[in-house]
Length: 523
Ligand code: KIV
Ligand code: ZN
Image (cartoon, rainbow, N blue to C red; front, top):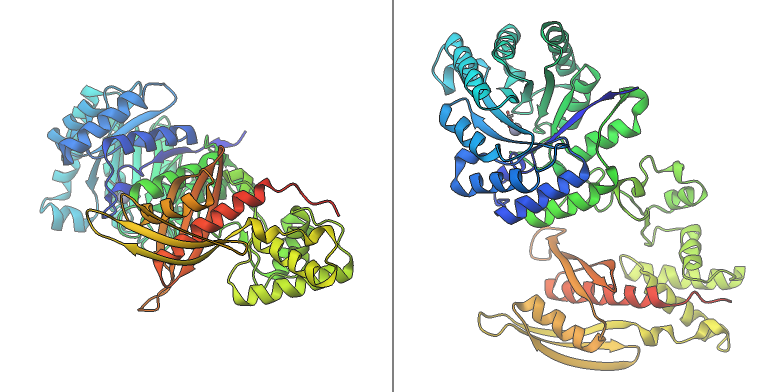
């Protein structure tokens, strides 16, 4: 049986330290609920001594999410009585509460930050643990800046706080200075000594990503005996962030042959959790971010698409379904080859194309792909229709698909405090429609105006915009998620005019809904 690794999630504490990512009480509780669904063992809900608002939010998480014995709720304290009391008073409502305290062990922290001797700092830590133990049985002690600490002093501190009653020892690479091999060796030495002192105490690591090695360092620690890992969703956190939970968990799962450990994480909840955290905190996930980035399961090269269609394991080591996505995404671009286009056409129902027909359609595809960045399903219908109209107008595929799809023509948006309003001109096939609407903001007005033309009931779930290049010609990339009849549709568009990109994304979403309603055409 493989060893269990405890997962301690600090998205709501270290993650919330990202400038601008502050959450309100309700958002914290909702994310904590999702983290519980994800299966984390411990949630660090905040730093209650920092503000009354954070105290209240930690208390709410303890009451509403910590109400079952399968999860532990903690929060951070410095090694001072007032902070420890504050944590205790906030987390005590949980079934399984813990006090987490931090105190530096490196010379830089001891001498420069605290201007004290090493013995004095060690004693402060021991006294703080003894005090916390009078309040709760579970106490975690973090030796801040452990990776830059003198090893024997670090060990003396750990041994002393274990004797004082700490039940978990967390060893942080606070400034992301550690190197995997050296760090693994150090954790191995600590694990050995701790097991020989009291093997009921868990050894934990907390790695920062300043040199891009947080995940590698966390995994090196696991290999060398760490029992527990501290992570955040999407790797958010102070400065360059923390080890990303999804990366550590999926690395362990994918390379079980190397690590021979397991976690309690329900990996199918990873994407849901990532999206919730990203949208509540307003922090976009880097598109090429491992596991949770937009492109993590999107294949664009024609050679790769061909290989994947022959055998998925050719280019796929993690199945998108395992992290809660529906399927891999084959993005149709000018680089896509015949195999990928044929596969996309077959999915839409065009299964019996002759070689000549397919070649003609593929030619149309290449022309459009050269003009457009990405080719969508509704574009494929129009390409097929164009082909048959030119070559065999009586064929069933010459059906007027294009009459069913919407395309953007023009817009005007007025943004002011009293009457944000929008007017749009949209086509459906050859027909032209115009409409105007007011809204709570310019995008709301724009989407209301388009919705009054398309007449398809959708709820906007998520709207994201970011720049994909710099300078005056920067492209604004809009990504939206809408819900229609209980199903979610994601659509994207890019343009130098962000309002136009927003309109195009909405129209792409509407066209995807229309495509989903088409009955596959039998040739
Ligand atoms: O990075 C760090 O050292 C911390 C501690 C509070 C664990 O966040
Ligand atoms: Zn940290």
